[in-house]
Length: 206
Image (cartoon, rainbow, N blue to C red; front, side):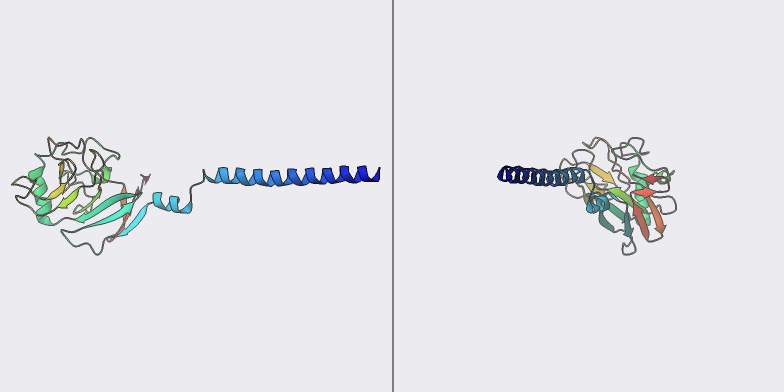
């Protein structure tokens, strides 16, 4: 009898240990499963608004930043480049930016000149550098005048190397090009004259 009791006791101990181990493993699996639905800190940071310093950008120059895995262009346009937008207004497909690609044009970038610059900072252009046709990234072509793949009266702008869509220095697509829309202007706000927050404005995040 004593041997039988010892065997039963041993079996119960093994059963309890097995159940406990299974419970721990199950809990670990459940925690791992749940964690796959929780965004990592890196993922959160990648989708967060981006603070940029534009103090080093000189008139006529552009700098590229990365926001949400997208290239964001920030350019300071010269008075001559701003003047050239008056000429291109009649040549672009949507001069008033009435249609949008992925983002509606923010109200503070709508003005009579249609240069798509933030009110009070009209010379500075902020664009998402992705062509609305097939998602390529256009190249900067700021030098005016005749050159390969561009018209003789080119005022400066952007050329998509994939299928030839061209955009002026407000990011507006020219007529009869593959791209169906203008380049996106993301929400942004000025923290100071030299600091811009990309992806967020007074109304919230993009």
